[in-house]
Length: 160
Image (cartoon, rainbow, N blue to C red):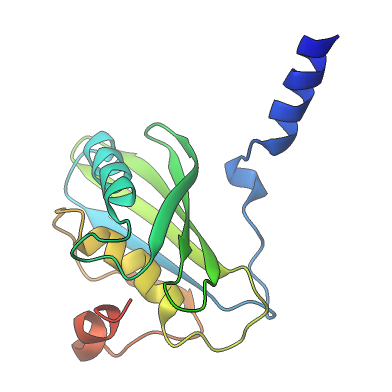
């Protein structure tokens, strides 16, 4: 009986990619697509390593990244807690492709009710890539309410 109870609790607290919060008009959000000339296994490993490295005290982290759920070579769901006000954003990276070509669909959504996010959701995703060591082309904006101008991306995202 005790084992069944523990299994029920474990099932209730685990997450899945399909549980990612929906993007809506009440929460600031951003979706991007990155293309990388590497295998998806290498991309997944680089993003996983980066998420685990972006912690308080690291040279580049402007917040706390934590892995919420992941399935190897499929997706990584992380949260990022901002350093000052402790706002939390959910961020999903889904990898797909074959050979040395990988497409990464990303999305970031604020957990708190918000409309304007000062480019935070864009930078949540962008910073994971630029600190990963991966070589990537400029991301394709799929749906972002707020994104920095192309010439200002690094400067803007340095604050996050």
